[in-house]
Length: 93
Image 1: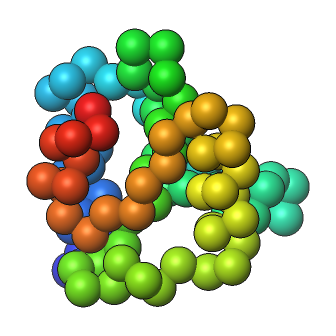
Image 2 (image 1 turned 90 degrees about the vertical axis):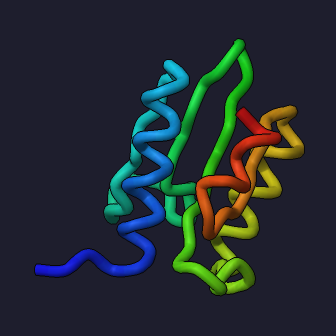
């Protein structure tokens, strides 16, 4: 089965994070967790980073719940970004 465009971005982000030794996890959205949590929750140099991935050209396609979680991370002193290309992480990590 072919990977979706968003899955291809996620694979590149995983490789990027691993190459740089960044700790990360990918929370599963279930009825028992919090909805809208970014695709990647990372810790790098003591900083929490949330990364929401989108298919190329779909940066603005976040849901209200995703926007709320991203804002909550930022308000708490963390970093949260939405990317559709792994190169957008160069200034973040």
